[in-house]
Length: 135
Image (cartoon, rainbow, N blue to C red; front, side, top):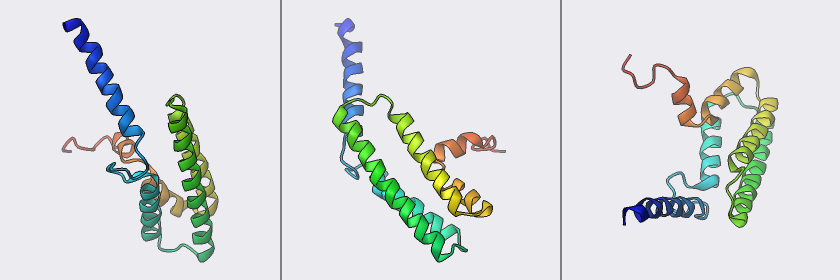
């Protein structure tokens, strides 16, 4: 009986993980899916960078729109293939491409603010040696 317990628990965990990954965008996940993530990031960018020109806003809107379309296509491709292999690399490459396009639109100070906004919270916390240690 114990010999079956570990593989059964592993299988259950894998199935739960697959269900979580295969939910439709915004399908009950805490983050709200790609559309919500992009919307929040763009709104934060426009709120924090107060000196954006109309041309910069227009270019950024286009970058975020294209990023959203490509991100959805990537997630759909992953769902349809049933394989998560290479998913992280694809998503990192997509984010890097967006970052490079944004870098071409913003000045150095603005891009520094963008990096603070767009860097996932876990990476920011991991990069901060004083985070959560009380001093």
